[in-house]
Length: 370
Image 1 (cartoon, rainbow, N blue to C red):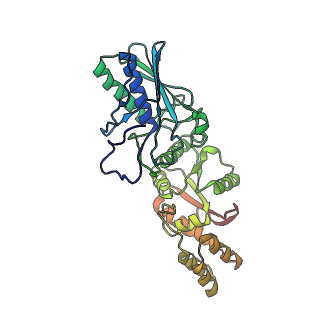
Image 2 (image 1 turned 120 degrees about the horizontal axis):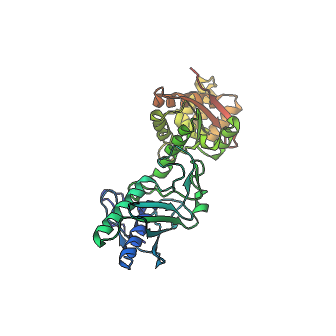
Image 3 (image 1 turned 90 degrees about the vertical axis):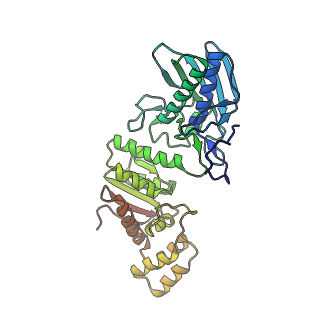
């Protein structure tokens, strides 16, 4: 485990903060480097994070043999539902040729980049720039303290990383063979969903690098399967947007792709139609009164309008509208598209596809519609 007393004082302490894979790899790398130079592993090992915090990490394993030192840290993601929580991050360090500097290698469970568009060259280990800087800076600080060499090879491994990577975006991003080593600040903020938003942005980058003209962002697996079948889009054109419509649109506004299809369930997209850009249930709610007004504009009878306004959920409201042959799904799609185009500011066109829980399309607002 690691000490969390050094996280920023303004942090919300109701939930436990954790550490990124990059911070854990940095701690393991620093411990291994110190052992390589001095013959002893610092345990716990203290590192410095990009903003100056100095947390300490206990070693889960260590070994010094055959001209290399190995140290491992168990990742503690705090209260964040991180797929790598509890993963064993192991780093081996050995001296390399003079003048080589710090060289990074992918060990077992760490992927390699196979597609352009990411902040790493094709063929490079999937160790992001920020963790690389963090590791390099910490090795430099340890080198100054112990008068060690500056040319080292750092190999990062993650136990069961190949299996864990299947629960991430890595395959869509062209990262093959394991996980990425991530983290900008070194600290995991519970439920900030920063990793998810980061993955959306990198997915857009990869699609742009592949010169795609059309991508689809979906709120869930049902709508993603439906839109993929409709257009036959490649995997790298599919953005697992989840609830983050605003984050997706804003990034695309500055990094445009000509056509964006947003596909989602009726309830989620009814919130988008009402102007909400974060579709999580904790941050926006379905307004059946709004749906009733859309039904009225679509020609619903006063009785149907009143019934929809009184329904307990979007799903039940949809059933009532469909029973009375009211095209409320199309009305939701039109309003959702209008909201998206406001944020797009002309940088790209938007299409909205609305699906029910079974994957049947119940609404559409097409590209180029007035």
